[in-house]
Structure formats: structure tokens, C-alpha cells
Amino acid sequence: MLLFILKMAAEGGGKELNEIKTQFNTREGVYKLLTHSEYSRPNRVPFNSQGSNPVKVSFVNVNDQSGNGDRICFNVGRELYFYIYKGVRKAADLSKPIDKRIYKGTQPTCHDFNHLTATADTVSLLVGFSAGQVQLIDPIKRETSKLFNEERLIDKSRVTCVKWVPGLERLFLVAHSSGNMYLYNVENTCGTTAPHYQLLKQGKNYSVHTCKSKSTRNPLLKWTVGEGALNEFAFSPDGKFLACVSQDGFLRVFNFDAVELHGTMKSYFGGLLCMCWSPDGKYIVAGGEDDLVTVWSFVDCRVIARGHGHKSWVSVVAFDHYTTSVEDADPMEFNGSDEDFQGLHFGRDRANSTQSRLSKRNSTDSRTVHTTYRFGSVGQDTQLCLWDLTEDILFPHLPLSRTRTHTNVMNATSPPAGGEVAGDIVNNVSNNPSTNDSGANTPSNSLSSPLPRSNSLPHSPAMTANNKSCAIASGVSKFATLSLHDRREQHQETDHKRNHSMGHISSKSSDKLNMLTKSRTDPAKTLGTPLCPRMEDLPLLEPLICKKIAHERLTVLIFLEDCIVTACQEGFIWTWARPGKVGLSSQKQAVSPSGTII
Image 1 (tube, rainbow, N blue to C red):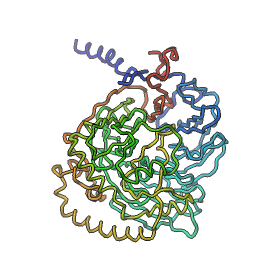
Image 2: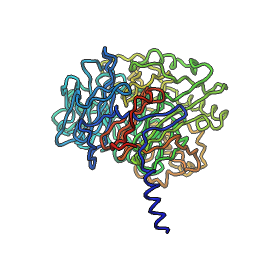
Image 3: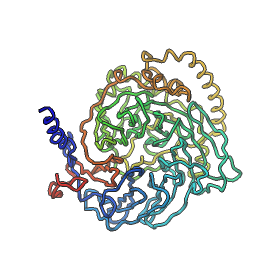
Image 4: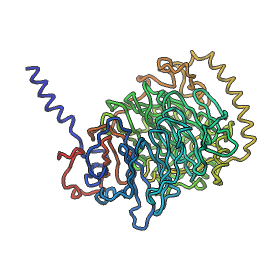
């Protein structure tokens, strides 16, 4: 009888458990899968994904006259497709790709559009490959402009992430599975010999080198970060900070122009695979091989919560800019600094979009603030999870929290003594006059616009390079000071355990505490420290929804204004209409990704 019951449970309960959902409910309403808006290879046959690189999706809006300027690019195996994206409006026509490319000997691994230069007639798309090359193409003109690292003299490992530097038309950053990142200029060549480097700046578990050459060539900079592959990186909404996650399990956040480490975080165990910034740049969510989503405060440089809902590795995390809400009595009131005002009006050009729903929170104000950050995650367990990060998690003890946050903001917003070393290089090669230099060491508190239809952050202001020589000189003295500080903390290492007061660690001192040498990355030594708090020491988030939506592991999650876009390793890209965006009559029948009616 027991065997019979177990068999019935496996057949009945298992069938219900493995059923793929075509809609789900949240507090704002019902999200529905639009089967007519499914994108894939033209034959719609599931792709045999074994041994292939993850399917990735990129969006761009070319602002054409027809009002349908959205374009989508995705890779499946050795193939790369470029289509008009019709979203919730019309059915996808897979028989007419604008561009299709099939590569031999290598596979596309990632891609990113340049939103600053995109028009109805031309668009710049960077494509990274499994053999280490990076290609610059124009899928509208069906042209290939350049191939970088063609002879693989710069790096022979797989490209894991490629992005344009926000606000700049010609600079882009490339990460490899070797653990290196490289800054390129599209105008420069890569040379016919392997590059020679000289050290620019070094810290614990990271170093930055410039390319030593008589003539300007690529790469402009080489970053070596952590141990193992660099799995993903992203720029902060204001473009000043760079966050990256590595196979060694560390999240590291750098001041990009000053080439300084701002803070670090360690996964509960295993590598970190993905990360994203909150719309206001105050929080970072990371996910990876510990099956968790971890929320890290940029201002306090500490982990504030973890979320458990996935049953396997988390492959993508993303904030929903259109559901996230930060509201107070006066949405246009700022912290009172000049940086807030300048960042709002005088930053580098952002992508055109409507005003963000985010308003500013004054950390020293005593008024009631209603805060909810919505983010999502997808994983190798084929599940989509949605999470709400609310004020009871963000500010568990509001009066104390406000005092602590204000203290850390003051510490963090002091001008970086290290200067803008990388900023000098960036500004010298970009020939783009910068428009603002706030000197702040935290992301700009200006209102950030909603994301364009893209999986990259909106373009935003960069630092200028005023008084460059003085800044570099002060940077040398600062490094001498930090070295002495490091030596002092080595003698106090035993004090930095569970009982250490995380709330009063300044951003600079926590950097020195959290940056571990290669010989000290033993997880047992970091567990229970501010770098990696124990599970019982943090709030544990539960997902709002957790739904199985695919047969194969999920690799894409992008929040757009009227829909959510997901994709799986079989090569299917799905559009989920937001509540109220599509009537019930638009869906004749619900069809699962495998083609069966449920």
C-alpha cells in the first residue's frame, strides 16, 4: 500500500508540481503569458542546450517614426537574432528577422546595445564570444565594424559580460572567465603583439594596470579581480560605481573613475553568478550558487537581508523599476546637497524615458516614509520568484537606523582622496567633455529615470578630471596611509567576529576589513563576520510568488514598462503582460513553452 501511495503521489502530485504556469497573481493583479509574443528561432524547435552558453536578451529603442522602435537581440547556440520587438501589442513575426548570424568555431555569450547612438538607421551592438573575442556590429545595416581581441592576444578565455560605459559613445568594458576585465575604445586597435602592462593601482584581491605602449592601443585598462571567473558586472545608476560578482563568491564595488574599492560582500557559500543595482543605487541584490538572493546596502557596506525561495542556483536578479516605490510627503525634497540638484539637471545624457516613480528619502527627516523595492529572480530550478524589500527590513529600528545611515552617508560622501585616476584615462581617450563633478563617493541621489528597454542601466553622469595632478598625488599618500591601516587591522582581526558592531563601521574601514588576501578566502573564516553574516543574524525574505515557468533553466529576466521578459536555455523568449495591459480576449488559449495546452 505504501508503494502504491508513493507511486500515486509521484504521478499525481508530481504532475501538478511540474505544471508550467502561464499566469500568476500579485497584489497589483494578474500577469499573463502572451503566447503570440513568443520569440525564438524561426522554426520554433526547442534548442538542444547541452554544452551551450546561456541564452541572453538585449533591448534597444531606435526612436523611429512608426512608434514601434523597440528592437530585441538574443543568442541561441551559435546563432544571433535581431528582430522588431512588438511586445504586448502584436504577434511576433519570426519569419522576418532584421539580421541573423551563424558563427563557426565560437558562440555568442553576451551582448549590449549603445543607447546613446541608436537611431532608426544605425545601431551599435557589442557581442562577446566563447573564444574571447568581442565584435562590434550594426544589425540594421548588417555590417561588422570591428573585431577586438581577434588574435586572442589580450585574453583567451570566454567573455562573460560586455557593457558600454554609461554616457560615453566609444568606451566599453569586457569581463572574462579568467577573472580579468578590460576597458576598450572602439577607435583604437588591439595591436599585433600581446600587450605589456604597468601597475596603476593595487588593493587586496584586485589590481588595475594600464597598457604600456608607444602608441595608444587597446586595452586602455586591465582589471584583475578576485579568484576565478568574473561572472557579471554592472554600473550604478549614476555611472560612477562598478559592481562585479566572481566565482570566488565575492561582490566587489569599485569607484570606477578613482579605481578604488568601496565595499565587499561574501556569498553564504559558492560563487556569485549575478547582481543588479536598485533604481536609486542604494542597494545591490546578488544571487548565485548558494540558492539565495542577498541584499547589500551600498551606504552601510553590509548585508541587510537574504531571501530563500529557489531550489537551485540563481542565474539572474533584476529590480522592477516600474513597481518599486519610495514615497514621502514631498517627492522633490532632497538631502540638501548640491550634488542632488546638479545630478538631477546637469548629468551626462540618460536614455529618453518617462520620469521615474522613485522619489527621494531624506534619511534625517522624521516623517513617515513608505518604501518598497520590487525585484525578481530566476534560476536553474526553472522558477521565477518576485520579492518585495519593504521598510520593515530596510529600517528595522527606524530612529537608530536613521542616525546610523546619516553617519555613514557623511563618511561615504567625502571627496575620495584617491582622485580620479581611471577618470583621467577615460576622459583623455573619450574626447567627451564632462558636465559635472560632484566629488561624491556614493551614487548620485538624483532621481533616476526608468530603464530603457534594455538589460543595461540608464546612461548617466561621469566624473570630470579637474585638478588631476593634485588628485593623483593625493592618491599616492592615501595608499601609504591605507597600507599602515591594513597592518593595524591584521593585529585586530580576531575582534571582527559576530559581535562586531556592523552598524558603525564606516565605508572605508569596512573596506579594509572585508578585503581578504588570496590566502584568507576560506569561507569558514568569513562566516559570522560583517562580510558574511550567519543566516540567523539576518531577516529572511520569502518570495511573493515562486512559479515554475519553463522546462529548462532560466537565463533572462528583464522588467519593461508593460511586461516582464523571461527566457530559458531552450531558446524561447516569453513576454508576460502586466496587469491591465492586455485584455482577456487577446489570449485565445494558454500554451506552455513545450506547446501543450494547459
